Image 1 (cartoon, rainbow, N blue to C red):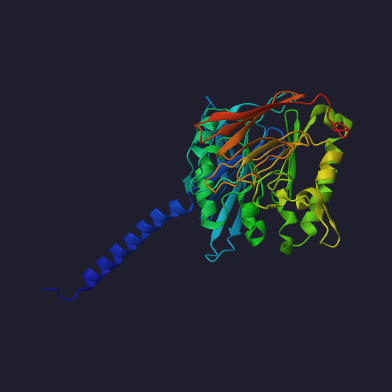
Image 2 (tube, rainbow, N blue to C red):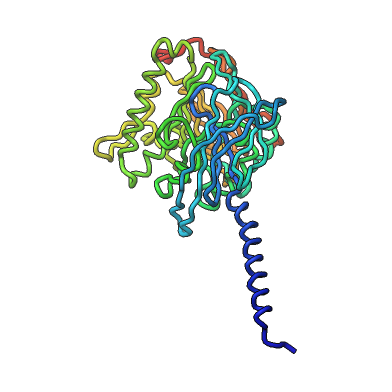
Length: 420
């Protein structure tokens, strides 16, 4: 029934196989060069926005954009690509693309997509930052949001795309590394592609000396996102790494470099002309100095590393409490503990969990400095109203978006002597 193939049959088979191979390549290439994990961030330069995305194969880094309601994609910007090799067992290669959009009109809505002729992203939009010191920015704050069931994500997505927030602050733990990190970055695209997404490192990013965190995000400055500061409205915001106090296998150099940078940055922010323009100094770091949880974490200890430093190193590593007090930090934002807790003014303080990771518990009786506690999943809203008033709300996702705590922080006096 089956005769031996002729030369003609063999040639036809080769041609068909070749066509199938070409077809397969055509199918694969757009997938490998298709942009994903798109997010925008503020690069710390006026009238600019930084677009970051990744591809599985090498491609050009291009963003086409234009004003909302104007000619679609009237501008084109090109950027650069960096190669990131995952330190995990797959040893896979990713291509991280960064393009900075400059000379944007302040507080204007833009439409954009990113990629190249080998594949374009979906169309997204963002609003450029208002550069005025009288601007009253609105923030959403959270930390420790995982990818398995990021419970608060759908509510945050809806509110973000309704234009409720000018900036997102993710205070550490970006869903670990590797493939889990990929999935998380895809999930948050519904937020991070529309609103500047500002981060700090958490303990879950520790692997391979925080290489995933350093490579995936694009924050201001030249410290690979580990610490940086930026200005918005009446505030100077400082992001730093608490993890330098815990992962000493990577060396003490980062700890001391960060401390020296923090000191210099706070000194600059406290120059009279700078503090007059931006009186609010707000910090964000992953592990808190204080908490009333019952899990034995660093913040439950009187000799907290973040608060008081480490005396088991040579030289002794300084803590941050005295430094923040000395330079009049107004508000400290933290995460890590899977609870929400607001303190009375030792410094005002919050932490909030937006994910499905297990809740932490509290000790039965709150500390004297603890003003409000909750174990609900949720996130925080913050509004910098003016030079003297700052408003905070805690949203419970367990209670379908109910505001369970709110506070108006009023400070008529800012600066190094404000707490004395």
